[in-house]
Image (tube, rainbow, N blue to C red):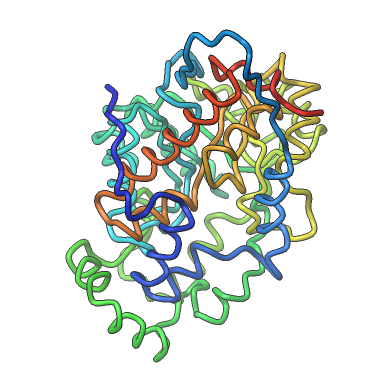
Length: 384
């Protein structure tokens, strides 16, 4: 299935959507979406260093047209980008996982569901006819891990993404100030913000308080917010390592991807473990302010391991040109998170379709401008 490109000309860029989203949702929800960790150093560096990449156009070369279609893990997608897994999406805009999953399905791009977002494996699989991906936050208990994997397999999700870059939760000053820890706190300031954003409040009331829908079968009933916080800390404590990945590789019959790769050592381990792909990522700059931006390790990893494993990237990508520069630097595919959440926070049910259409239009223009006919050709236009 493929959908025609059409977008609202009042919001022709992701920055326009961000500005609209900031006005439309409570400050605590916007700051949860928009912020990084500590001083936001890596958050800003991610996008800035992608935009330091330069492409060389070829104006006098015969051009037979440009196609964004990209084959990934045996499926031909209509564009070389997908929607990243994002936690607590319903906090930022009610029903947003369903909105984005539907848009992704209609545009034939991948939507990846987070373990800790506000819709379930089964609901997203229903919307996407089993074509969505699933990202696993590794539980402490193997029994829970095994059951979640069985549910994802029963839903016929083709790709499992395992997350490696959250051994601890990032230090996020905005969220601490806003009481968005575990347990969250409903401060007087937050209550005023809700009153000042009645559209968000009414839609939240209609769809219900955001909750971790995939985890509902494992969450004891009747927990207070404090008890829920302790339950989440206990359920998802622990660092991912090779010994935890091996049984997942044995159990999961579909494609297996490691997300959060930030160096060549981890990329090499992924290859040796028989994984199908890696996503070079630093969690959108939300975990380690002192780390590299994503584009730098991507370039090294793709050069060294790109012929052995599918190398993808997220974190910092905000536009069609950003996608092009990431692919020119070695990414076989890309993912965006905040850009899509800005879209739904700004435009509600139309936000997913609108954001995908912007990115497709921008990327198509770049390809035609530089004389790139297929997405696999991007590296030959990289200025070195």
